[in-house]
Length: 343
Image (tube, rainbow, N blue to C red; front, side, top):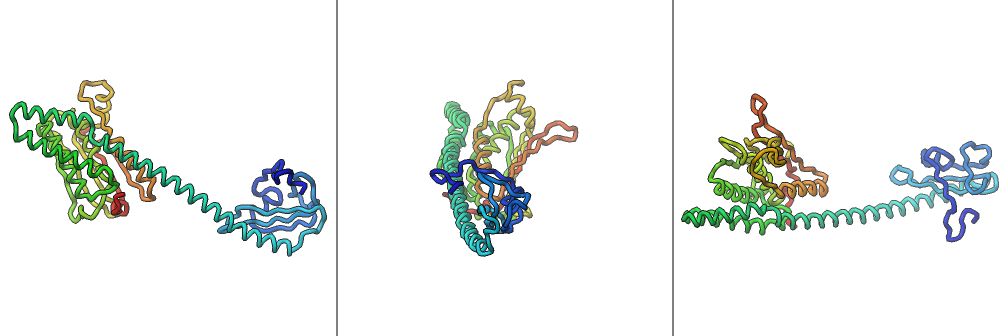
């Protein structure tokens, strides 16, 4: 018991690199060794006292050494093949126990991560409900409805109010769901774009383009994900532009089984939009909180699965190199979109 002081703790444990000493050599080769005379083995490293014989047996799991059982004795030629057989059996038992303990620990860690992700998803859902519709959008929409009433454009006011109410109801209905049918996502987009078009007196044109054979009823997508990208295109790309303003949103399935969503505007481009946002130029100020929410939700999707969604932003230019808009491409693997669960 010389190595084990009170409470069975090693007083001054040694740290021996793999490949050094007898234990390090066994750890490297994965082969048991019996040293009958340590004075004749240059690898021997004494710990608390010098001993004359040693045995070291690897603990192996899935062809990988995860530990070494080592024992020493003060007599030469003490350890035998029978000792090696017994220690090999013990090492095999230890391997299973250690592997199970590691597996249990990993399972606990995975569970903890899943709980963290679940918590983050719940928080994001709440943020999405609060921030999906920018407060300025709601305030300005209500003001526009009021202006229509004051100016006695009653039909326009009724149309505006009907679509606006339906939009808010849709946000409430879908904000607590992870996935909704692509068909519903497109309906929501149309509602939003119709309202923005009404509010800006049809000053921009938009088109939603669906590829042939795209089953929008069966494919599910993360709920209310695309609207913030459209909002960003309108406010930062189109509203500062003179002349024709267009926004195209297309949906298609790629050959490698990705749902491809492209949001493309012919606006002023990101650089000029950033200058306006920074106050270097006069213009409309608008911050899309929904964009931050969507980016966070995509980051969460990457954590939840090995199948990684992709968001790629391209600055468009004309033949002379002048900025002519922005294209956002979102790729969501169909294997991910086809999940049917909403909870």
